Image (cartoon, rainbow over all chains, first blue to last red; front, side):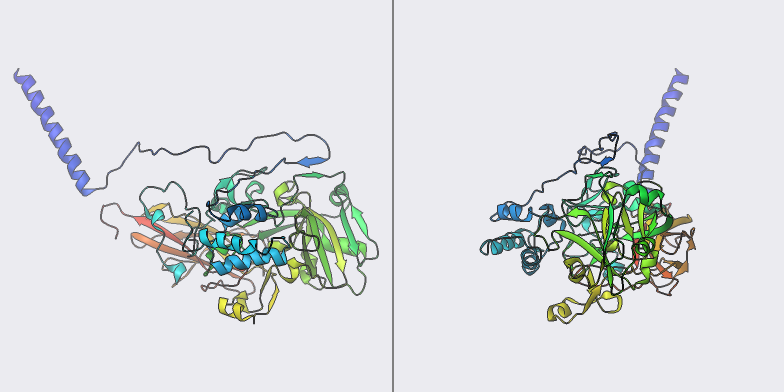
Length: 142
Length: 412
């Protein structure tokens, strides 16, 4: 009995000491941590398939992937996707930094005058307006 | 100076890593080492940072620059026109030399590889617009971080040998290069064909090679299989991919990619201002050699260095004007400098690795900087450049590094 009591006391003492040490450690030092995870979405980046090329003189890598961009919905978006997509993916728009109305107008003018895309006169300001409305320093969201 | 500031977007300062980088940066400068695009996988490539998908533009992540030679699978990709090669039939492919020459000729891949003397050169290929996302104010164009560059060991035949065998006629002024890529724009415009030319009098012609090997392997399709023009020291715009045509010209090339594209202000460092551009008073010249640059590759911002540790700071340097002869590191925001140890010399136009043993003198946030000097005495400057094309960036690079303590509250 006496023996067991002493044992209980010593356990309580140890537990108290442990809690105090822990509290002290928390106050004095940043704690080490283990086992923290955060849920993420997997699969945005996929591993490429592995294909043995066919024999012969043809050296092929197959098709390149296309990633249709999520452009902001709004007036003129369909003009942008159809005309800009003639020569390059509309993803080019998302890759640009936010540009002012003047800068976007200069880009559209360059595509028409320098690179020869045929866009009806009345559609050109609509395209500029869409780009300036959604992709300027003041308005761009994503 | 903005680049010297310790300020950073809020997302990067959170204790937990953010889910991902922002989808775009601006109107301020991109504060990240790489472009912020998503990561994507492409044939013969490791996952790279996607800028655009049609045509393909991919940026090399920072960690691939830990070695002096950039792996082919990590080498950045930049095409101008949407219709780039998916398949090359070497049974049909020929390299044709034509124009103002005595003996126009066509070469098979086998003839180039097995019947002509081979030359090897280590050379950095860097996009003219590398680091364009640093520009203030921002300019339109590919928003590259620092990863539109790579170094490879290129093996092939000398351009000079081919020109000599073809016999350049008197009255010739330039040599024009074209590859397999085509655009959907009207014929005669820059949106239809990508053409680049070099002056026949340019000494770089003697150093040019037509490379069929890259780091001892065939070129990846996206880097210009089967043959690519290598112009050591020059920006990559001249390194025409999937090369098929060499034309000797009697008149200067006036196509878009020479007359309007890839031109820089004819000023020291090619810098100007938006006001001067608006006034229309800026004379331009075709871009040519790459100014001296250096980069800190490790440690990155997410490394935390315990106070008292001697840490190896490592990186690369290069110059289009010749060998890098000195690399220096600063830990006081580019006020004082100490020399770094240079790695193996692979030639005048290669990446040169460097290493600097750094022992932080205090805990807390540090700003390391690196600058290189080349054999012509060009020292990397600490002033930014600005031009409307977003070319020639070579400002001193900085890296924020957090140094920790052994006791809480030690760092302020």
